[in-house]
Image 1 (cartoon, rainbow, N blue to C red):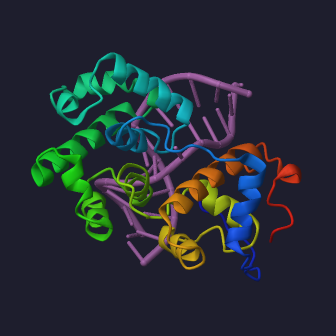
Image 2: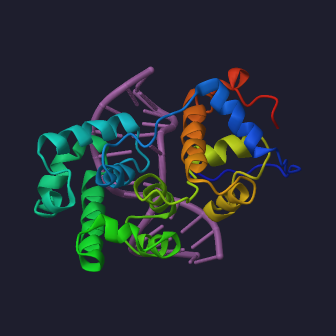
Length: 224
DNA sequence: TGCCAGGCCGGGT
DNA sequence: ACCCGGCATGGC
């Protein structure tokens, strides 16, 4: 996350369900996560770190064509070959190492069984995932929410940008602060967390990009 | 052409 | 406890 100084402002505390309803009414359901299996979701979560999703899709296509989009098959893959397959996603050497680190964790702690991993429960699994080199808070929460179906609210660059622009908090807030901001104000519901984050990303992509903002038509105008 | 994308880590103050 | 450079491709 880039940090930028912002003048002190009085924080606003909008009704976040009203904000959610406004996004949903304007944009509709987003059908996240775009992935067919929990394992594909996990790999996508790592591949999309600071990367456009269109590039991740190309990498996923390569992995599917190579028939290695399962934990067992990908584990048998040399790290260099894995890097070559995920090349379109960018940072391919780093991400190959991160995927390898996750697979090592999955096999050492859960015998390669994703369901066993998910059964650890939200709190403990989150800590375990954060101990894997290459999995930070957003990736961990994405895995928890969209692969494990555990209600962990996902915070990303769009979440900070949109809501700091609307003076809910400063642009320099920490991940944990933003996560608490939401979990304290919206019901702890899996489907809601799922759709809320997806709608934030869609809203950000369409209306809240740094160089091509389209704030005038943002569906959130008037709710803060 | 340059800037940006659904972060994270490791080394330096 | 911050702060910052590095990682890399593809789209507009």
